[in-house]
Length: 317
Image (cartoon, rainbow, N blue to C red):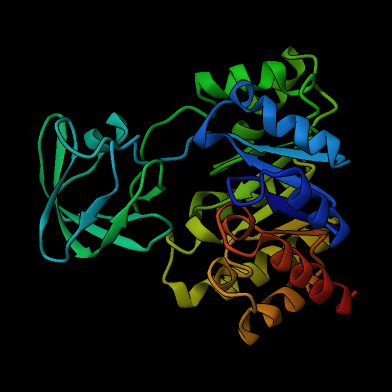
């Protein structure tokens, strides 16, 4: 079984990465939504020095994100916020597609706004669930189809140098169907990197529905519960996870479970009982790998989080 962490400011130090490997980490993820592969030569050197053999890059793909902010924005419940021109930067395709009444979940659903006015270049929204909005956080628009390419220009540039950077796997966000997997496979072949594995992330209902058509085209399926939990009422997510796990098991295709596995450990040295039970059950369901994201990238206890992930999973093996 594989155990992945995510590299970020909290763990991008040689000693911490080494301790995470000693705790049982077998691979690491680099989220390229926060910067291109070429800008992380220091991280790549640390990963090699720590002896981490598996490096996954998480592409931008057809994902929707807030742009770069000069500083975090406080969203106050009941107040108005402008998304787009002269406001919080967001994809133009979202501005064109959204209509009044559309709800937008920000930062994995921590924040919620509702469109009250759709202007040609901006969306005027009311804050329903407030908090602090940071740069490059995710946007989910339940029920709304936003036209976007499988791979961005930045993705294609990253794929060109992936092999020479030691990348062993590519995570494709928001897979919508067979065509997305084939587009990534073609791009890898053109980059002379056909041996790099494809990890197809299920993050919306289109991906859930289309899973049978691309199940055998991916090397591993990723049950990415952050945005997937925004695509349905949250109480339906556990059932969806179980159904996806069962489909992968039946087809003999390995799958990964990820997102908020030890979320409390971003700020606490010990996880909740529910979190360790979640890890245990994911392994019992047949997960080939499990992954930590913010817990190791930005949390206060990256080494301890990896220890809990590995030790809990191994009790179920």
